[in-house]
Length: 86
Ligand code: FES
Image 1 (tube, rainbow, N blue to C red):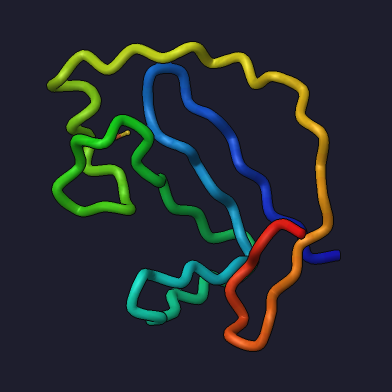
Image 2 (cartoon, helix red, strand yellow):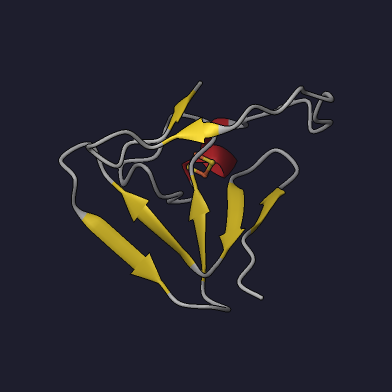
């Protein structure tokens, strides 16, 4: 079964393990096969967003790493394929 795992790193990025497709704001796709991983910036300081470039270490990024429980909703991908909560 294909499954994506997102792990919040303490005071660091989101580690995402594929398979998954990352679509940037211009619609360009980065397809990552099963078992591959990327780190997505959570601190906002990366020069290579959306990817982490380790700037969080230099800037002393600190975050609350406990995720609150959220209500989930189905996603409507619409004609453009963009995911939207319905
Ligand atoms: S989380 Fe690493 S640079 Fe932002």
